[in-house]
Image (cartoon, rainbow, N blue to C red; front, side, top):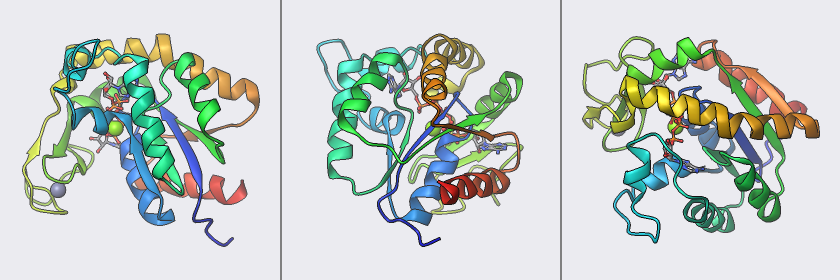
Length: 212
Ligand code: AP5
Ligand code: MG
Ligand code: ZN
C-alpha cells in the first residue's frame, strides 16, 4: 500500500510498554509528528500553572491535571498533518476531549505483562540530548552511558525508581485501563503483542496500519 502521509495514530499502553520506542520509529517511517505529553511535560517541568508545576505531579507518578495536558495536545495536533499520539489520553475525560478535537485513523494498544514493565522501566536509560531510549539489558548502547545516535549522556528518568514505577502502574490501572476498554467497546482497538523484540513489535504495528 502507498504510505498515507497524513496518518493519525493513537498508541496506547502501560508505562514501559514501548510507546516512546515505537512512536519514534513510526514518526520517521510515516513522516508524521510524534506528539507525546510525557516529553512535552518533561521539557516544561517547572512551568507555573494554577495547579502547581508538572514536576510536583510527575515525580510522584501522578497525572498532571487535565486542563494543562489538554491544552498541550490541542496545540500540537493543530499544527500536525499526521501524528502518532503517545501518552494521551490517560483517563476517560481526556479521551472525551480528544474525540472532540481529532479524528483517528488507528488506535493501537501495546500489551505487556506487569512484571516485565517494572524491569523495563527501572533499567531504562534516556539520552539527555536527543531523548532516544536505551535499556541496561534489553537495548544496550554501544558504549555504556553514551547515546548511539548523538553521543549525548544517558541518564535515568526521575520517575523510573521502583517506588514511583509502582505508583505509575497503579495510576495506569485505575485511570487508563478504562480508556483502553472504551476503545475496545467501540470496536476500533487493535492489540499488539508488546513482549516481542522492538523490531517484531514494529512489524506488527506496520502490518496493522497497512490493513486499516
Ligand atoms: P510518560 O512519559 O508518558 O510515561 P509513561 O506512560 O509512564 O510511559 P513511558 O515513557 O515510561 O514508557 P513507554 O511506553 O514510552 O516505553 P519506552 O518506549 O520508553 O509520562 C510521564 C508522566 O507525565 C506521567 O506519570 C504523568 O505524571 C505525566 N503525564 C504524561 N502524559 C499525561 C497525560 N496525558 N495526563 C496527565 N499526566 C500526564 O520503553 C521502556 C523501556 O523498555 C526502555 O528502556 C526501552 O528501551 C525498553 N523497551 C522498549 N520496547 C522493548 C521491547 N520490545 N523489548 C524489551 N525492551 C523494550
Ligand atoms: Mg514514553
Ligand atoms: Zn542522543
